[in-house]
Structure formats: C-alpha cells, structure tokens
Amino acid sequence: MAKKCKSWREKLRDSKGLPKVIKINEKMSKRWGSGTVVIPAPIEVDKLMRKVPKGKLITINEIREYMARKYKASIGCPMTCGIFAWIAAHAAHEDWEAGKKRITPYWRTLKTGGIINEKYPGGVEVQKKLLQKEGHKIVKKGKKHVVVDFDKRLVRL
Image 1 (cartoon, rainbow, N blue to C red):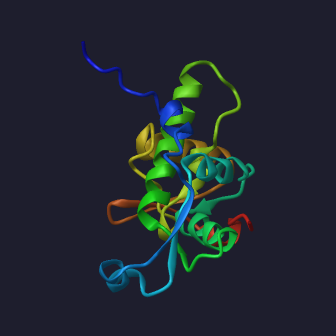
Image 2 (cartoon, rainbow, N blue to C red; image 1 turned 45 degrees about the horizontal axis):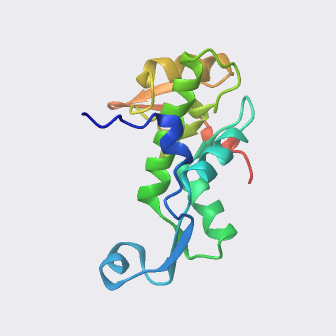
C-alpha cells in the first residue's frame, strides 16, 4: 500500500524537534563564520509571515535576523528559513483552495533584494497581482521581478 503524502499544512505543523540552536561547525564556518545557528520550527516562520500587514513586506533575511535575536544565535539558518517560508506559502495556498479566507499572506515575503519568489504558489504572476493590489510597484530586472522601494515598506519585527 502506498504511503500517503503529508499535506502542506501537516508539514507546517511538523516541528521535528525544532527549534534548536547548534554550534557552527568547521564546514559551515566557511560560509557563515563562527558562532551558533538557529534552525526555527516551520510554524514559527509561518507566524512571522502572518504578522506582515497589508501594504508591508518582509524578506527571508528579516525572518532570519529575527530568529537569531529571539534565540540569541549568531545567525538564522538561511536554508531552513527559506524552505519553511516555502512550506508556509504552500500551506496557505492549500487553505485558500479549501475556501479559507484568512491565510498567510505569503506574497508579502520576498527574497533578498525585494525579489518575488517564483517558487511560491501561482508563481510570479499571481504574487505580482496581489502585491500590486496592495499598492506595490513591480519591475523586471533581468529575469527577476522586484518590488520597487521594498526596503521602505519592510515591517519592523
């Protein structure tokens, strides 16, 4: 019998023993320097994304910095913070498809430099429409879509 895949919502709630703070080892130090790294729980990333009000934005870097401060770590893990934001986006889309009105506004969470995350549900086009509806201007820079003056609209956590 085939194993049933977890829903995005189930993946979001599966904390797998997280959060945890670990010492940056020699291999990691080449990229991240020394100190400690926090690996947050997926639901924590979702909670932060939910706090971003209409007209405001957040980037993965702000989420990472917030987590590092919260857990008194040197850095927030770039890999897991990005993956957990992606899971939160898909869980929100799953909720929307189920008819829920209040979902995590994942389109307000951008990549570094104000870049729209093309891997979120609906791709760039859906997010562009949602962001424009909230008053943001989007421009194309090369192959990327960027929110103009995104840094002036960042939410302070």
